[in-house]
Length: 179
Image (cartoon, rainbow, N blue to C red):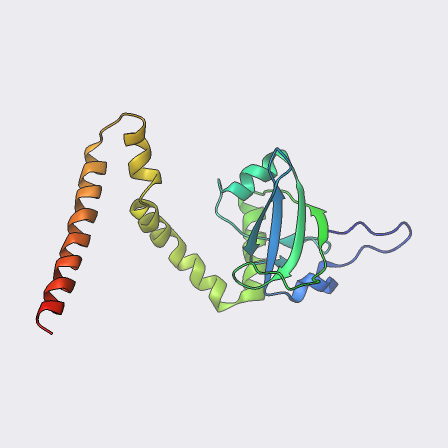
């Protein structure tokens, strides 16, 4: 977080102005220096008094950018990432933790702040992320086709999606005909 002025005691994360923010706009930086901002849950660390905890899925853009540039900027925001005019920006450094004990510490901090909502997200993340990952129109099914690979899973997927939407369109049109 913010660097304390020489002689000042470091600010405890729980006393920091961002500690009470429900969402925080986390800005990480590309190799080019271009900022990328994402709204995240943000909680004071329970184990390291001067640190905060943010939870994200591994191998996301955030973690990839942090692998080469640990500089971050933080601002309080709403759930969609909209920052209020005049909201202060806080600079700091971040590190990605993958050790089981460190990940458990981050989860405890997030659950301590967000309670039941954080616990429910732990229960729903694995099945929904797998379903959404399979349902993604572009990444999983189109990229192999784009590279010249015609996989049966892609053909079945796009055939099923086409059939679903043609069936829905037919029902809508038939319903309009009888009105």
